Length: 232
Image (cartoon, rainbow, N blue to C red; front, side, top):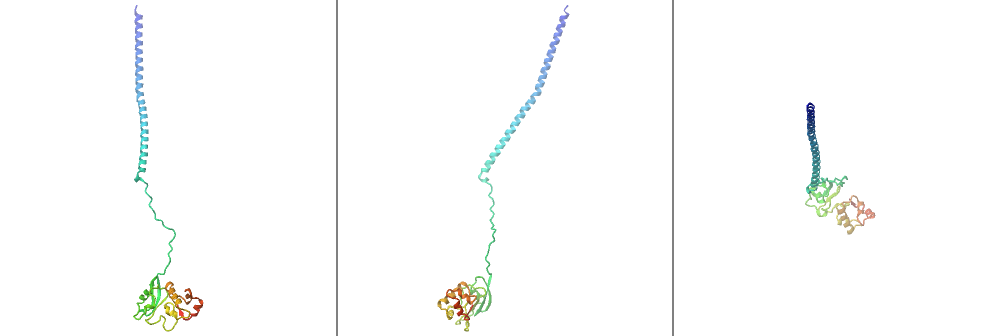
């Protein structure tokens, strides 16, 4: 009877189908697993590539920036702007010598309007006479030093022609006396008379008779002899 043999054959066929099913299932599972892993691995590779690219791009940008800055900094026209020069201001105040704005003199004698006149500092005797209206027709301007600088507070006497600077036989006026007038005084010869006139022209009028001692050759003794004979 052949029944056991058929049963064995059927059992073997079942086992063969189970093996095929298991192999197919295993193959399908492997393919699914491989299919799931591939995108992940691809993503990992792609991420690594993107990170490397980003680092490379950043390094390249840094190099370009450094090179560009060096080129711009080294260009002739790229030099730093020069600081604006600020005028130096001295802290020390400027000291200015005070000078009188004007001088006042007394113009007397043969002028149109004798009296006090105001002059600018540095004006001369001629300016003072003009300020007094000018000389009269009989005025002797040769007896007056017109070029002398007028001094504040002095008197300028303009005599008439043929008249001494100090008429009337009174004391000789040092401010207007000529060398000839001074020679009439005791102890004053041509040399001292010339020195007195020169000193008066260079240094201004004598404020007092004692100022004659500033003239070389005149001492206290001679000044004492002139007491009452001369006035400033």
